[in-house]
Amino acid sequence: MKTFPLFILGLLTSAYVQAASINLDNIDLNKARAYQAYVITFEWPKNASSENVEYQDLFSLEGLNRFGSSSNSAAPNGIPNPFAKFQRTLNSRTHVLSNNSWTLIFPDTGASISESFQSSEQENGYATFTGQVTFTLNRYLESNLRYQHYLFGQPAQAPQQIEQTQPTQTYASDNVPQAYQETYPLQQGTWDGPTQVLSLHLHNKTASQKLNYVDHPIIGTLIYFEPLDLEQAIDLATRR
Image (tube, rainbow, N blue to C red; front, side, top):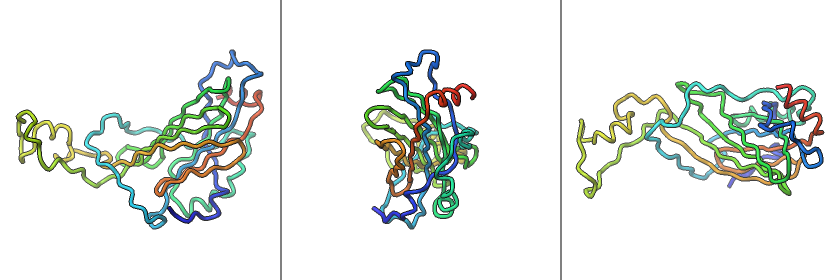
């Protein structure tokens, strides 16, 4: 796919912490496990891969939120970030999309915790990158990742022809059916959101204290879990 530089083995920067949605009063101390999770995503330079990855045209802005706030922030006080020293290297060689960290408290094996995040970079109020990760504690720590990377300013194309078997359409102008004009406002010059999207679904399994790189020719991901003392994790969760 591509030759990966050795520096990928040591990259992870400061991040954001959000307490897991869990009832701390009902935790079984003998079964619960806690970790500080780090997930950073970045866009490879266009010349870093010879693979051709196709984005899909967007014909509706339904479900896309505008003016969302970035989730990027520093890790909590008292939690060392072992990869912060590589931040300058990462920033100089890639385009960082999101940089996040969460305090995870799993009440038992098999439990899952989901978090959403997005890039700080926006166009017309729309984030250029959004993501969701679901962490699951089993024999390994599992990360189920879903990404959307958006492109702007590349107009989506209206259908070239209408199937003759479809019901008769009402044409408003320019021989484009009214239904399509309503669905594709870009054709009328009113579109201000993303025009193309790359949707990714990635999965990773790892033990704690091991840096993992999730490979893709466009979007790279680094994942790291630091074990936490349960009392410390509860303190971090309840103070936020």
